[in-house]
Image 1: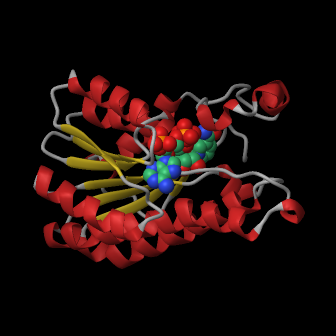
Image 2 (image 1 turned 90 degrees about the vertical axis):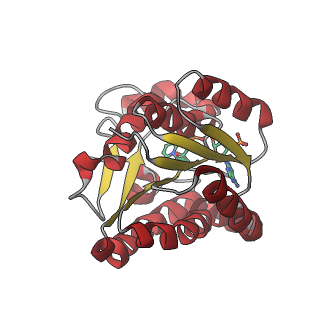
Length: 245
Ligand code: NAP
């Protein structure tokens, strides 16, 4: 389905991003992924991708660093020859009630989760426009749809990502490029491991009564990256077990 396509996944070393790398590779795409600093996790993802018969490479690059993003995307285009799919997945949390949150805590989450997606998208636009095709998929969150106490920084960034998605979709539609967002609820990753003590209570509020597996999010992303989704753009798809119904 994606044979011959090159996908760039930010935050591909762990969690949802790693599952997205695996699913895209299982469908034939070559994979370049970015990670922040966890070299052991990145090496493990590379090892898993190595057996899948696709070209795969990791790049240590913070999406919060514009110069690093520019250099890394230039390097990826040189290493892979092109880029067809971008998944803006890299994200962090720094949860605190607004009255306890510093300006720095707010800004760093927005700078990674929202501005990071802008920096990466800006790098792929000229390539995709030249090809008159391409898929951009942004990982937002139900926090951006519903709000969530303790996450005013994260929810603002994720809500911003939805406006960003719709705008990019409108700007690039005439060039055959789609841009969509996926909004997970709770997913079993390192990010939610800190919620272990509250997991039973949180699960009670999910109609399907469980957290998602990263692979479930990855399948939706892969669908949006595939030709089956050619007529879908500017959409936000919740994948949350009904949490935000
Ligand atoms: P995770 O397990 O904490 O993994 C985060 C990934 O992002 C890692 O690969 C990390 O790299 C990378 N990363 C963090 N900061 C980065 C930066 N500045 N530059 C480049 N890469 C960076 O997170 P996850 O749960 O898989 O979440 C993935 C995405 O889904 C995030 O955008 C998150 O907001 C969203 N999401 C998650 C959930 C959930 O319940 N887990 C729900 C809704 C939405 P290192 O390994 O190098 O640190």
